[in-house]
Each structure stands twice: as C-alpha cells, then as structure tokens.
Length: 123
Image (cartoon, rainbow, N blue to C red; front, side, top):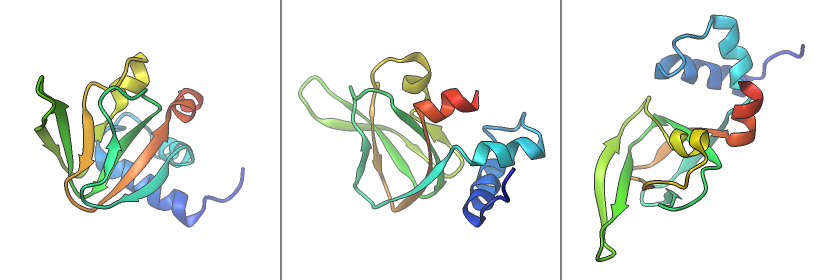
C-alpha cells in the first residue's frame, strides 16, 4: 500500500472532526480519505440545484451552506443553514431520488466531496 499523501492526511483529519464517521476505526479513516476530494466554493455559488440527480454528497469543513426550496411562485426560500461538520446531499446519493432542495454557499466554504461511485466502492 502506498504512503498517504498530505492531502489524504488532511482529509482524514477532517473526517475525524465531522462526527459522521464516528463508527470507523483510526485505520479506516485513512482508507476512507482516499475516496474524498476537497473543493472551495465562493459565497453565493450554487453547489447543486433542487431536482438534480444525486451524484455526490458533501461535508462542510469551513463555512456555511444554505438549504433552499422553491416555493409555488418560484421564489427560493432558505429552510436551513448548515455549518462546519454537517453533511448534506447524501439522501439523493443513497436513495437514487432527485435532490429535494438546492444548496448554496452562504459564505466561502471548503467542502469534502464524495461521489456516488466512490461511496459505492468505499462501502
């Protein structure tokens, strides 16, 4: 097995901080980190849109993400604001349904991303 990279070590540390993977053993965090990537999202940037296919999920490392729903008259309404350590987008990845809401960066964010294919390999 190859040596973990600095990026993998950073991702491993972020995963250990988020709480979503509390059931993993320390060695499992290192293995899981290889499936994630990091993205930087600027405030106001849409991460995904309500109705999109669920091809990836995210964990917030820094920043905030607004969860928005479209009203019957077409207005976007923020129904929740997620903070560091929260995951989002996982339901559409797991159940194969379309996104039930849009997610927009409410501030500059760093996100851990896990694609559907990577999640299936990891599981």
